[in-house]
Image (cartoon, rainbow, N blue to C red; front, side, top):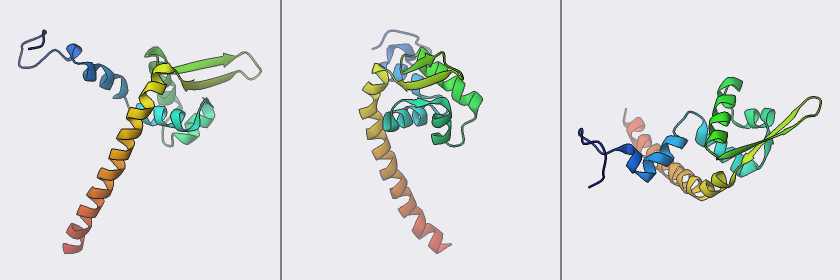
Length: 124
């Protein structure tokens, strides 16, 4: 049995999957990581265009969080205007295979769900 709290469940801190999933759970996080993995280093505006629907405030918040977690690097150049480029850090690159597998599984499940919904919609 795992050490930790015994109030009806295990201590989440003792589960390595919980640790990593907590890093990835925030809104837009996996989309940002996926985009950086697929398209390489990007400036803020380019990243915002590719992660369609995210606000500048939310993207800034997520990027700071990912940088703090060691998943993303931020490269600042003191030019006029300043140039900031974001890229996957070593830990972010380690996630690429896992995120790719999840993307493949997600596509498969979406297709299965769509196929299952088609007969139901036709019957209605």
